Image (tube, rainbow, N blue to C red; front, side, top):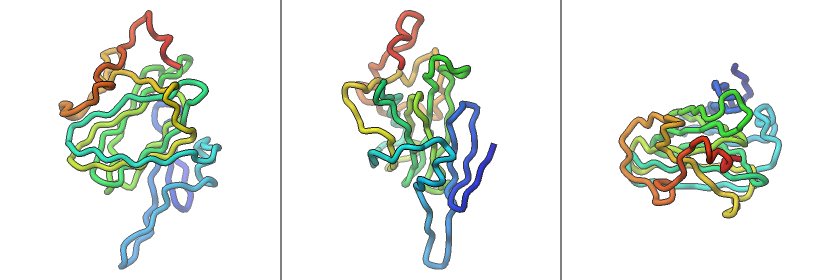
Length: 190
C-alpha cells in the first residue's frame, strides 16, 4: 500500500507497521530541499509522539554491522532511520511476540542518493551494515534512551536468518556477544 503527501510517499512492507518513507526533492538550479520530518504527515504512520531525541552516527568501514538493538518496556521506541552519507543495508526484526511475523526481518538499502528512510515502530529490533566507507545516519526517536532498558539480538542468529550483503568487517564486542534466541530464553524479548 502506498500513501502520499506533498513531501513524502509511504510504502508498506510485509511486516505490519514497518514503512519505507520516500522523501520528495524540490529541486532547482541551486540544488534541492527535502523534508525529513513533519508531525502532520507522520500521523499517517502512527507516529503520534513528538520526537524526543535525534542522533547522528558515523561509521568508517565498509561491511561494519551495528545492531540488532531495541529498548524494553516501558522505553520502547519508534525510530525513523535515514542515511545522509554513503549507503547501508538497514534491517528491522519483528520482536512482537503475538505478531504473525514474529522474528521475521526486512532489509532495505538506504543511501544519500535514494532520499528514503525506514520507519520502525515499537516492537522491532534495528541494525544495519555499511555498504561503503564513511557512512552517516540520522535517527529520530520517539523516546529517550534508557541504558537500563537496552537489549539486543545477535545479528548472526540462525533463528532469525538475516542475509547480510557483505561479510562483516567490524562489530562491537556488545553486538558480537548478543544473545541467540532459543526456546528457553525468548523471555528476554519485550
